[in-house]
Structures are given as C-alpha cells and as structure tokens.
Image 1 (cartoon, rainbow, N blue to C red):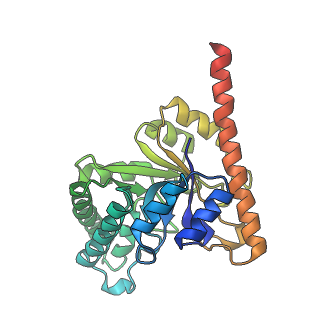
Image 2 (cartoon, rainbow, N blue to C red):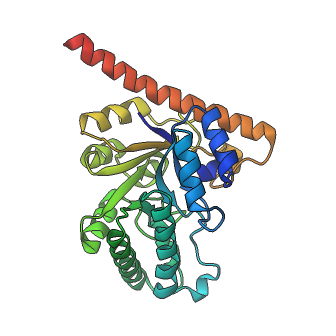
Image 3 (cartoon, rainbow, N blue to C red):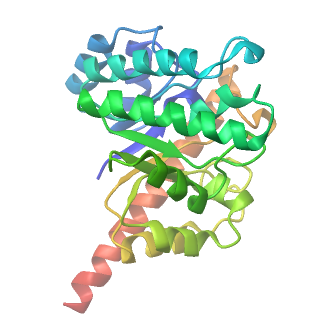
Length: 279
C-alpha cells in the first residue's frame, strides 16, 4: 500500500532533502504541498520516481493571494492554472483546489463568496480536465478557511462544478471539528473519497489525541475505500500550521509520522489476517 505524508508539515520543499526524508521515514508516497515556483516539476517527477515514491497530489500550500483585498476570480484562476501546468509536468497528478476559498475573503457577503468559489472551481477544473488532470477538494474546518466545512457542502460544490472530474479529500482532524459524526461521514463517502488525511484531535499523529483511528479504518474498508492515505501531523506547540524548526522538534515529528504509518499498516495487516482466518 502507499502511505504518504503531506509535505508542508516537514518544512521541506527542495526535492533532494524531501526525497531523503521520505525514504528515511519509510514512506512511499507524498502529497507535495508547497509553492510550485520553488522547484522544477520535472526534477520532482524524476527523483521521486527513482526513489519509488508516488506523488499523490500537488497541493499549493501557500495558495492565498498576496493581497486579499485585491483578490479576484481572474487572478485566482490564473494562479491555479499555473499549478495545473506544474502538475502536468510532475507526472499528471491531481491538484487540490480548496485554497481557492482563500481568494473570496474580500467578497461582500457569503453568497457572493460562494459564487466566486464555484466560478473559480469550474474554470480551473475545466482547464485541468482538458490537460488530463484530476482536481480534488479538501474539506477543512471553519477556523482555517471561509467556505466548505463539511462533506455535504463539498458534495454540493462538486455537483455545481459538474463534469465528474473533482474528487474529495477528508481529514480526520477537520472532521473532528465540523462533522457531528465523523464515522458516518466516512461511511457515506468511502467509495468516492480520493484521499484520507490522518491527524489526531490535536493535529498530531495517531495516538496523540482521542480519535479512534481503528474504527475509522474499519469503516473506510467496509465502505469500499480504495483511495490514498496521507498523514498530516503538526506538533501541539506548532499548531495549526507551523513546521518544526529545531532538531528536537524534527525528531519528535518524525517519530509521530513513523508511528502513524506503522499503526495504519497494522490495521491493514490485522484486517487481512481476519479475512484469512475466516476463509
């Protein structure tokens, strides 16, 4: 199985150090989250491929406009088209679009903000589809983004965008905040879920909070989930979105990533043994 990390959490954008870190952590996948202008997509594609690492998505982490008051549909669409171009050269991998909601903060009201979001998503998704790129939308909590805080809201957006090219990302940390029943949400969306993000209730790795990941794993598998899994941990004193800057913090985060991967793979192995035992 592919087990990935969302790369912004590591604080690494350069290709060689990132690949070295992924190999050291025993991971075989990455959701590349950073500024697409910082690296050459061909280099990212070649070096991850040589290392046996799969890029599961391009995720523009710093996707907010430089000057929110000057944001517009045109500037948002142009920025994301360049991200799509990067994704094509990086190996025709999916692109996440939830950052587009950050380009709506200068809208006068919620209705106009949602109208701009739909307009931008439609335009970028059409451009991506024409270039052979799938788009993904992550459901994030209301403290971090202005729009689309539940799976139901994401479904409504996907229906308005249309075309069948957009997939969904759900995150255990974000669901713990905005979904009344995360297990029900996973159960209802398992088959159409493209990527599942692992972060515990305080945004650390598995075991640092109160989320029952064994139950979430079981629900996903029972529901027919076949998508990607990526861990996205943040140390408690660095939440919500700061990468480690000291050796001690980097080592702590590394241990959480490794433990999360081992724990999730343990769920997989346990389920396989149960199937074999029942056959």
